[in-house]
Image 1 (spheres, rainbow, N blue to C red):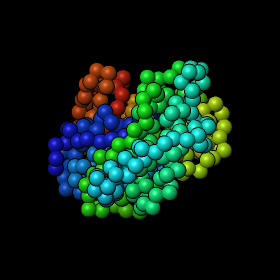
Image 2 (image 1 turned 120 degrees about the vertical axis):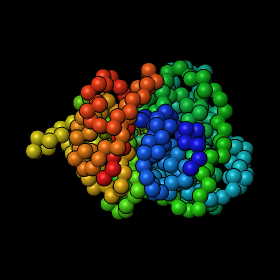
Image 3 (image 1 turned 90 degrees about the horizontal axis):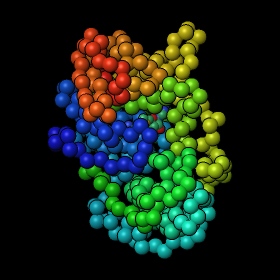
Amino acid sequence: MKNKQAVPTEGVKYAGSKLRIIPHIVGLLDDTKDVRTVLDGFSGTSRVAQAFARLGYTTTANDLSHWSEVFATCYLKADKPVEWYAGLIEHLNGLKGYEGWFNEYYGGDPDHKDVRRPFQRKNTKRLDAIRDEIDRLDVSNEDRCVLLTSLIRALDEVDNTLGHYAAYLSGWSKRSYKDLKMRVPAIIPHQGQHRVFRRDVFETIGADTYDLAYFDPPYGANNHKMPSSRIRYNAYYHLWKTIILNDKPDLFGKAMRREDSRDTAGGSVFEEFRSNDEGQSIAREALRELVKKTRARYILLSYSSGGKVTREEILDLMTGEGELVKALEIDHRKNVMSAMRTTHEWVHSDHRHHEYLFLMKK
Ligand SMILES: C[S@@+](CC[C@H](N)C(=O)[O-])C[C@H]1O[C@@H](n2cnc3c(N)ncnc32)[C@H](O)[C@@H]1O
């Protein structure tokens, strides 16, 4: 295995991205034996899946969202040489922009500071030209995912947002003045061993066995009035879905969200704050079911102190289904990490820490 601490990954700004704790995640793999196949069940940006694949694990990335499928396909499955993609990307970067659909709804004039659009017009015009050209190119699905990932990452570098597309800034951010520039993504060398699914996690765990499954489920917020994150992810990144599908959907609201990103869709069981008929927390039972039904020798779970399920409940359900190998508690503000091997040791830590990692053996 290569140097675990310095494993490079790429991604966009994303709510709940595990970018900062990747060194801890891959470090925990030292506490496992004979792991070759891994599942990233909620892969989001695909950064953690990328780290696994870079380290030589046969990796399956799964998430409900279109963008996650596109990112993971780009990094784990694209199979042409870098020069081939570089030629295509140079062609796309050289296209002259025009006033198309994206420019109409998402482009703003830099002279009007109160317009609240996610990009400046010079960049949405280029987006229109590039996105239409990608559909005209005769390329494979994997190659299309490389071009779309490159385009979405380029947009992420010139956005006028706080990291999501549910609202836009009133002034213009400094980076929105930059020119959109696509780059070749850092595709991971492979022999076709990795897989990517866009499915509900329960469907994916029911279909196969893995040596290790990594789960980073949506945690929800302690605030009951907050929409659940399944809804929020749709609302936050609606634009990535529209760019991927290029389907010019009906839009609503100030942020020009797609109709199918409305808050009326069902939330995720992992964030449910209510109890079931037996009086058990639905979120905790969903996690228990996930741990129970996953056919893997090891399960590595990311969780946060603000989530619906407490760390004691997680420890309890993990020890009920197997053996705790190690747990980490990471406080980003203090840059402190504590490791625990027995449930007893948790008594000594305060409750203000933010990120947890639990490694269990089934
Ligand atoms: C906390 S984020 C994962 C972030 C990821 N680890 C990263 O570093 O980018 C949670 C992800 O779970 C996905 N998700 C929510 N419910 C899901 C479900 N039932 N099955 C699969 N994915 C789901 C969301 O689309 C979101 O990308």
